Image (cartoon, rainbow, N blue to C red; front, side):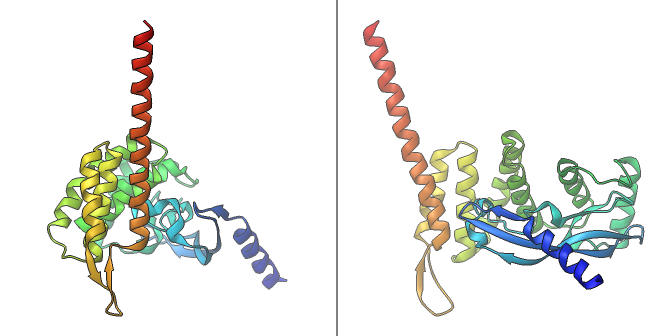
Length: 260
């Protein structure tokens, strides 16, 4: 009976998460596990992914080059004992100095200890706590992209992350050699320039990303990256649509002016 209950709980969790992924449906099976809060030592119940069906490269988060499970709220673990929040992958990776800083912050910034918190509260606390951890620029280059995706329905908030990312990515571009990483960096610079309404800059970055030739593991020469090229093509199509709309609006204005 106990085994059946565990199977049933797992099945329910899995069936509950058939979700649209942008290019089709995907299914995630989550399982509950018990882990220790690194600040208090108390055990808490969290969820971790067990099975995944679907193509992550077709999901909306692909435009930020961030992928599951970091795009799912279940992967942001929250301890109701202390209000500590972290992504699951490095939930326990705290040194003593980090623990000291985080405990002091949490003592001064209590939410609702003992209760679950909203996703908006989780995201805000997630960033605040990561700022107290010893993270390098490579981490923030990734983290800000994750946050840009999470806030995609809050344009002004998302633009703040886009603006932070551009100078970080420009520094990375000066360091990476030709190849896959350079293509991705150029693409991201183009994408965030686009979202900041810098169309001319975006086109230049996209053009450079599409022209890079690199050699794959089989020794074959490749130009650009397939799925990245597809996203660039979509942006260029969007640009043509924008220009067509502007021409139509200008034509209407001229017609109205002539009637007057």
